[in-house]
Image (cartoon, rainbow, N blue to C red; front, side):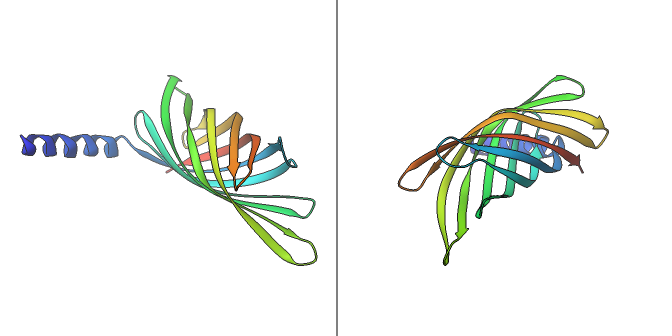
Length: 160
């Protein structure tokens, strides 16, 4: 019985890897602060897409009025294709955000971040290039006090 289960798991993993694709992404966005200031940001990411799921790792940076934000996130979610050139993904990102500021001396604050990617819409422009839009991604930050923001992102992806 155990041997059958292990063979089934190996076959499932092999099938998932065979249908997987690796994509790099770069996007610009705006983080609209509900309880703090709004700032533009630039993100770089690496994504692994299976047939119906995806995993991602992202880094981002943004600045406004002497405040700098650095983000690291990992995420996962579901994927579906309503048309041949259109793909929609929904998922979660969790990670770390560092807020730094230069005043009289340099200091920073580290925050836990949980982000909901309501819908990321990807449209194939060319065989390996995609246009990606995230209309709304609410994020909750936590460091003793909860902060909330809404992010929008527009970018491009390249499939290996």
